[in-house]
Length: 94
Length: 277
Ligand SMILES: Nc1ncnc2c1ncn2[C@@H]1O[C@H](COP(=O)(O)OP(=O)(O)O)[C@@H](O)[C@H]1O
Ligand SMILES: [Mg+2]
Image (cartoon, rainbow over all chains, first blue to last red; front, side, top):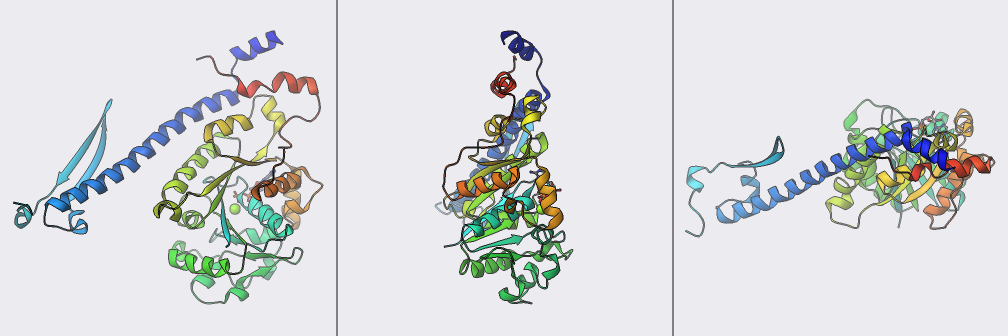
């Protein structure tokens, strides 16, 4: 019995390999999914904040604000691009 | 209140239609008024598996387009009381399933039925999304094979983000894992992912394990859902799954090698073994 275990231990079966590969790819895909969801949430909240301080409603502003997540090597870069139309520059509380 | 259950998987050919037919029939045999809807627009097959292909006159898309009444499109099963089938259309129009249309048909069915089983097409496009959008519960059909398991995980992500329950912040869709085409012999040889492996990876509560079985082809040949073959392993395994769906507890069968106690003891622990990293 112990010998058998030993033999098995050294020789991963194709099912063992399948499991290991699946665990890696699925945890990778899950974390990417979570990132996209969080990003969508953050984008929504950023829009609300911007809409609050500029004289615009959320639907109008959503076209002028772009949030993008980019991977560069080991790190990720979050890019926030806001286009301010001239006449809207005046902040509401100024 | 009707329960809407989607049978889904991402990957094609894993046993969704076989499962929809078996579970739907099983629920009706238990006395629940049940309808099985084929969402596979363009590739309808449920009618063949249920043996009612020659009785299709109107279909799901006719209902959505208001071209037929519910009573005209529903096919009453001739063998099992309380069981109805709503066939898919053969149209090539991918946009035939509109969200409003599907919602309207489901609402109408919900007045009359206790269980609505949605047989999803493969993929993650419109048909599959519509099949799962309104679901209260999901049966995720998975084969013990890498691409099927991965696709099942993708579907779990979609259930959690793109369903009505997710979008409206309602309690989440209740998920059930159904492992099908399982071969204990191949698992014991280390050639197939084990039940424990798949549960480990997906962590979804297990509804049932359906063995790879010759009874399935025999059943589809004759247009009789395999659950009605109560002598067969697959038929019994589906019967157990229906019982669990209804909240009963049953031990899992057909998951271990039947004969050869010694072999079983030697190989039985294989799946729990960790790889040396
Ligand atoms: N438990 C099983 N044992 C053997 N063959 C099966 C089993 N389940 C499904 N099949 C076969 O697999 C094929 C695909 O099944 P089907 O239910 O049409 O899958 P899907 O709807 O997911 O595309 C069919 O030929 C069917 O007979
Ligand atoms: Mg199918």
